[in-house]
Length: 128
Image (cartoon, rainbow, N blue to C red; front, side, top):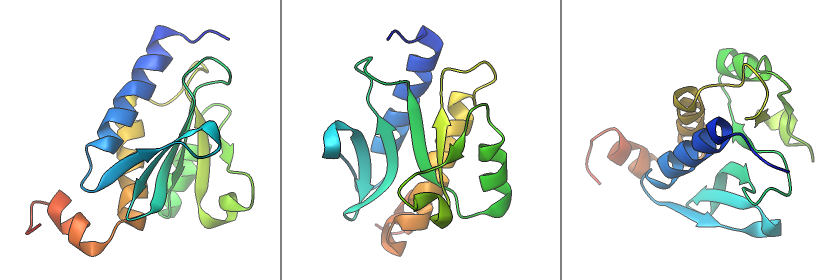
């Protein structure tokens, strides 16, 4: 499977943004890239080795944002019951897929839903 350069660039920008958030670490459970904060995954980044379509899965507790993400081409609630908790799988390849900036906004919302208050304060420019 080959990716478009545009989709791969969006994936790389969203991954770099996620890893730049306070306390974020990258792990590889199930062979998939996951970005965690305080031991909790806030972004499943899938794989970028060409074995699966490029996608990002994030938790979007805000109803408006959640609905907007689900309206993206081929987006769907996440499997394994995660969709009921606000997780959305967003493919990056389809025409009309979200921009890198919008993906970063969604990654940040997911981070804020799961990060400890002290790290959110650090993100917002408060005391570390």
